[in-house]
Length: 393
Image 1 (cartoon, helix red, strand yellow):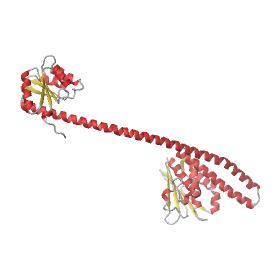
Image 2 (cartoon, helix red, strand yellow):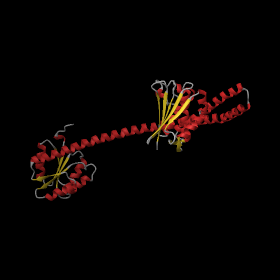
Image 3 (cartoon, one colour):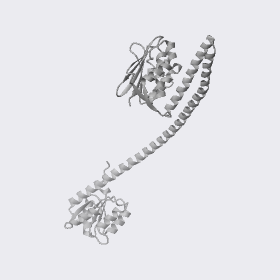
Image 4 (tube, helix red, strand yellow):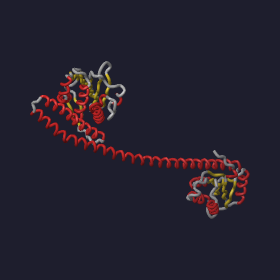
């Protein structure tokens, strides 16, 4: 903190009695203060307007033209003077003046006749208070400037971030629109192709041609499934998909899943076993999306299990949640890529062959939309397990 010597401190003494001016001036000058004088209130105001660096005003109460109270009130209404501390000079029997002085805006009072020690102590007290107040004001002003400066920087950064976000939204919308268009362009001719394949299979009797048509149908269905998955990802990531939830009986869901995957089950001679609390169990969700989750996970489990392998689907339900566990006897997940299992288009993962990784990423989005959870782990001995956890709302 800067130390200011008394000779840098200016005090204005205001009194219509020259003797009082002489006494108090002598006391202050002996202590090293710089002292100015005025003999009435108006003269004091003129001097304060002219010389604006007074640190303290000692103001007599009873003066002609303008008394001390009027002078103090005028100071408090003037922007250049309102912060200057005022100490009133009053006689011993004028206690009412003390109250009036505080009401007029004064900080203290000194009783006449003057006691030099009292004068110096009170003067020093208010000089120190004024100095501390000025320093605090400067610090606050500096802080306000820093806050303003920082606020401008943050506003600029937020503005730039908003521009970037807007650009990203435009790009994301363009990507989503593109995927929607591609899905539509794929689905439309595929529906016709799949229909004609079915007709040809019924009409032709040549086994070789029928087998080729069968593989063609599988490829077409796989492409159709890819288009459907892409569209679901687009809808969920852009929040265009509004979940229409209903109560889904797990027994019905299991039957429809087995029916839709009957060819895969037959081709791998898979032993698919459903057990647990199935009969009365149900979940709240979007029917088509939940069906997609079940079919995708079970399809993966069958595909990566050995021929004739056991695939177990266990249902466990309590008050808070329903857990559907899909457990296979395949090779399991690659530990190095297990953490990327649900990331879109992650590479180096067996589950991303033939769009299966895309299926799992979509299941993750669907489970998130249901406030649920998907967990993928390797079993201790053999195979992998995927858990779909639905909250019981």
